[in-house]
Image (tube, rainbow, N blue to C red):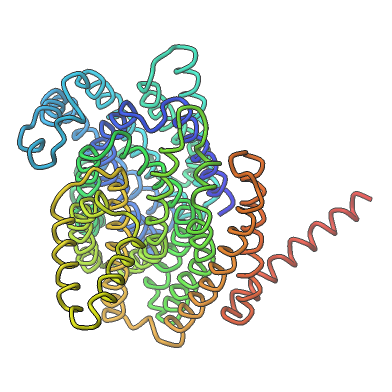
Length: 580
């Protein structure tokens, strides 16, 4: 978690550099759009397969055939997936001109999405160059992802967490130098991404060589690959997850197109907010899920059901205990957080408002995304990748419908208070006799707002809220399906502790909001120092409130946190005495 925290901090600094150099601009929108297809290739073929198939299959191989069997299977799987990834990249390069033509000149897409005024012929060369550069990144990241899987099976999480950290370092320095010294514009981000992917692989190679010494040869025979049932088993497990990731990436493409129908810079504002809300998910959810997966796969392989159930429930409770207060902080302090994170250079006040608005709606999805990550690992450990596909596809459909209807709605109204006030006035004037006509009129207006596009810049909030709603349903469906497949959840061990944490979080939010408003009235928040003071004191109050409250609402996690703090304190005191 500590390394992932540093990685995410560098990730924010990376986006801050983007914001400083380009703002939430049309040029940056083109970069995000051009890198969508290269990201899809990597996410569908490699990233989606790692947790769903590669780690569980390699874990089984390690416990059944030992280190030599593990190394041989790793070598074969890496060869097959790298070949497929290279083939897809070459095909994308061959049709890069046609793909660019379709994105820019497709009349049907322009008519349906009303995006003709957002991206045009003048963007052709920039989009094409970024697209071609971006295709190099998945080539190195695919190799690095398999190295990561191998090392995590060997329980080496430290070095695999260093790789993304150095990736961000390369992106930051590469972008800044290429823009300031060579004036390459947004092309610099694309080149830096390729450099970062190479660094991502290079960081892990020494550890791979160290743990690969048990290998029985280094060659790969095609006949062995074809006859190896574990290879086909990995593909059978990976295929449903590939479909799920493909659907998720299709979501991203549709959201990208819809964002082009909104105000200039909407996509960049959404991306900036998206990165902020991924902070707790990447640090806490990903860390807990990564560490839990090899153990879940091991207990499943050994048929130790009680240990499987224990690890799964403890992982969910621990991750929620840690993410709930972060959700509260993002909701209450969204404006100062966005301003402190991105508020520099070309990133103006309007960009701040759009980004913080998206962040508020995205923060709700943190809980769903965190739990879903752990639930998916449980399915993968059980060698079942088809059942979670149902939950994923349901979430995709909900997100697509929500993205369309909610962006329309928020392009008319983004503040619920005037709507509620209007309904209240109409109902009170009707004296109880015209309540139904008022509600009918409101529903008709809502339907009209959802099916027509207004001119409000806050329509981008529809993309954020639709994602939050979709992950909530995905979490519920996956939980029900997993519990039917394997009885792992109960009211006492799962539901009741979560509800207690929710109550503690609501108390924290109310207290933080009071403190925030108190400081906001007293301080000049147009100055960075004052914003820092406001953010620090409000966050400290919220953290202390949540920690004290957890003694009542989450005693198990409270004791765990208390023991950890005592352990840190003891180590510090001992070091101080030794120095003396």
